[in-house]
Length: 318
Image (tube, rainbow, N blue to C red; front, top):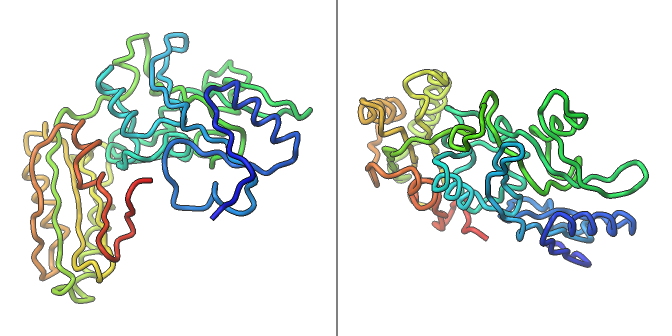
């Protein structure tokens, strides 16, 4: 548990500049918190003496000057998905947990249920507004984009998969897919499937032998390796196998596939059969239905709900 001397709550980018300048000048080690949760002690550890909290920088909007979408670091993924989809019918191929903050997720190369179709979040990163400290020790805002003529292009490149805090404090993500042209926002990021066929199945630990469990794990991994093509029939299928501790009583697997495919149901059944082939333990179907994409990314418990059963590693959102 960290015990920082201070927490600086920033309301805009200029306040971030001020906080970075004062903390850098004082020599205090500081960390940055966006708007979500973290399972590691990157922010709350004993060496961190100050925290810059960006949770109030949570805007999601289109900026015609670039043109690109702006996602501020304090926005959580559930809000990002809802605002992009309701406003323009587009999305990012980010993670499945709606309480994850965009701040650390995007710059870390976040991925999720649409990544087999559309890649990582950083694949769609056009630029960043970032507070840096120059050689003289002066903090300032810089905008760096992927444009070939941008003098700060290397700073953009440094954020296409880097860990948080290495190059500065990001105050805006500018998002536009590679190759996207024009100024119509509805064409500048991927469009998600309108509806998804979702499935949740479970296996009882009491019926599971070590050999059966090993077979199931091997089947899942081998199926993923054999069907990894972004242009294959399973490109829109995404699945999470969640082998919780035996004390939970059971473990589950949640899956989604584009319901608009003419053979979506058959593809799903073939996948489930392949994963369970030779296991010798029947799975129980907990949920199987067609839902809207918007419902899936914000409310469907297959990917979004915390698992509070004993032995689970999925904790409630904080």
